[in-house]
Amino acid sequence: QTVVTQEPSLTVSPGGTVTLTCASSTGAVTSGYYPNWFQQKPGQAPRALIYGTTNKHSWTPARFSGSLLGGKAALTVSGVQPEDEAEYYCMLDYGGVHVFGTGTTVTVL
Amino acid sequence: EVQLVESGGGLVQPGGSLRLSCSASGFTFKTYAMHWVRQAPGKGLDYVSSISGEGGGGNTYYADSVKGRFTIFRDDSKNTLYLQMSSLRSEDTAVYYCVKDLGSIPRDFDSWGQGTLVTVSS
Image 1 (cartoon, rainbow over the protein chains, first blue to last red):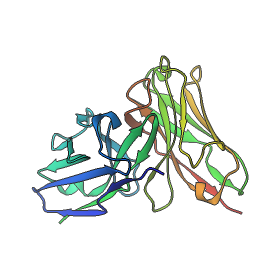
Image 2: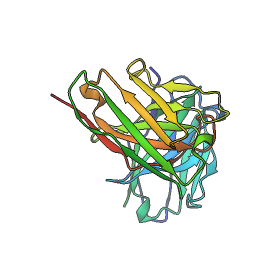
Image 3: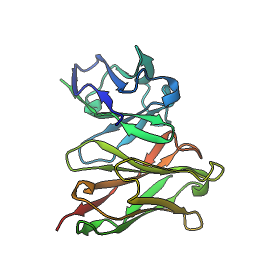
């Protein structure tokens, strides 16, 4: 069974920078896995942030960016705002069957 | 504006069946691949199934955990996505979200509905 692993939790100060990563149990993550990133706040449906590794949706704030880093997909938030406190999920495409990551809780403190 | 409204959730006994619907508006439904994602109470997101849009080959995809029990299908004339669930188990208890893709091939998730709760319990 394929497992996609994220950091369980990260803490960042307002105005700081935080990088979340997304690793696949099958090996290095490449652009061929079309990494997507989502944000979910308590009591809300998830919201898409990044698709195709680096692409932003029209509503994605400029401070969010996606990349590949050391064999993993990565989401970087630069100039973190209090409203960025949320759960973040990555998702990888394994030939049409998608797998979500374990999720990262980002605390802004 | 894209709108996705799920319905059909509720309480069902183990071994029972349920059909979820997702009514779509604000975009040309037939063009886009669509997905179902679920989230058990207090847990993370869990991929369920995808179906391609027009020109995407008519393909369907399933998580191993639901393969053979769930069927995804769509009625483009009604702008509606469905998930037929059978042989339900307690571990299928979750909020089920309908998600639109960016294209006709299931790849990049875009807009999400608000979800419908399915509870499997005796």
